[in-house]
Image 1 (cartoon, rainbow, N blue to C red):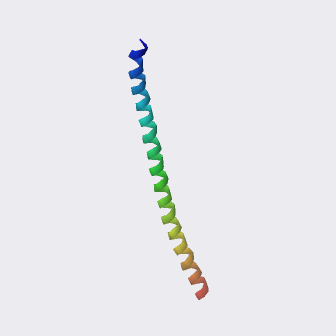
Image 2: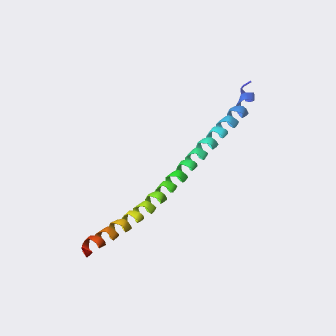
Image 3: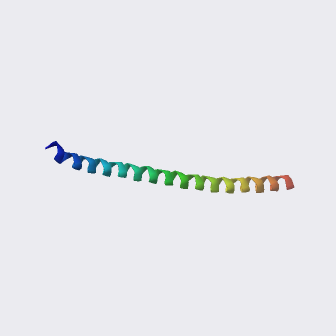
Length: 59
């Protein structure tokens, strides 16, 4: 009886591990996308600050 459930348990465990791995991979991709968005927003903000300083100094 134990030998009958061993392959089933192994298959379930393998599927669970694949599910966790997929979840971790998706999370890493989301974090990378967030960092890219943050970097882009930071560049836009630096340009705005630079333009504002330049206008302020020209007054």
